[in-house]
Length: 332
Ligand code: UFG
Image 1 (spheres, rainbow, N blue to C red):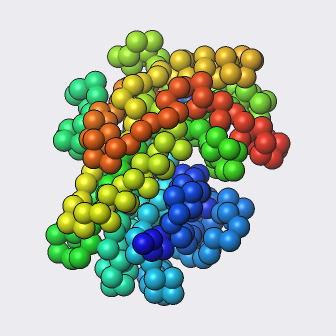
Image 2: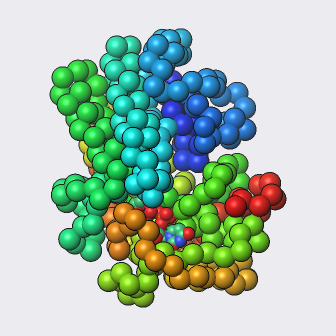
């Protein structure tokens, strides 16, 4: 017995993959996106689409009513760590204030389930090699703090109202739909694998390596890269768990529990593309931790998640395939 699911940010990178995963699992989907960074063309045909900002409570409420929405997956937001350092208020607006409006609309319209896109950035610079959900949350940039504040709101609202939630803390999301139906089309992208595959296809001259003096195996930043299809599969499982246990709420890390350095990622890009991207060593970026790797036991146990695309060459390969098939203009 499946109700309609509202996907905010459904025209964006991760949201567009979530729409496909929900449809594949038989859930009716409705998309809301303000198209500031998303693309109308990323939303599959036949999916009801509303060009609306989640901060427009009145419009959102009427969409929730019109479609009889039973759950919200909230992807819409801003995601670039260095930008958040430059422009913190943008992050507290898009990720915190507008989420508050959306959550309020959900409560007022009797939506029962809320799946929230949070981030490993809530952990800041962890003391341990791998971070669990119980590790301290001490964001070192406004991006992480803006998401952590929304997590806090959700917990409080869940205690006070008839709503349960799943907070998913993403590590580094990369790759594209293995069937080539969608991928990352973000303009002016800053994320490593996206930037590197653009460089591999000649859309950029080089890849900057930000920081060579971290306390990591080769001095470059280490991250837990997770294939976007495995990530959105976790969302569908989380939704099903919420529906099954209306009294349960949960916070789950989404990662594979292993890390690759910037140099290792670039080596994978070279292996997969058969070329050699030019590397340029540059200083550290503001707000970057050295190493961030997920403890994922809770995700595996709670929703019986089965990762399928851990291989870094596969992640890079799907990102590259999408990059090849998308428009050939230079990206910056
Ligand atoms: N990096 C480079 N060159 C680049 C881009 C990135 O060397 O051109 C490095 C970064 O310094 C970092 C690593 O590659 O060491 C990954 O950087 P990304 O920009 O791809 O991603 P971040 O780790 O900064 O942030 C991402 C998401 C956040 C999430 C975080 C969790 O944007 O939402 O991963 O690790 F919180």
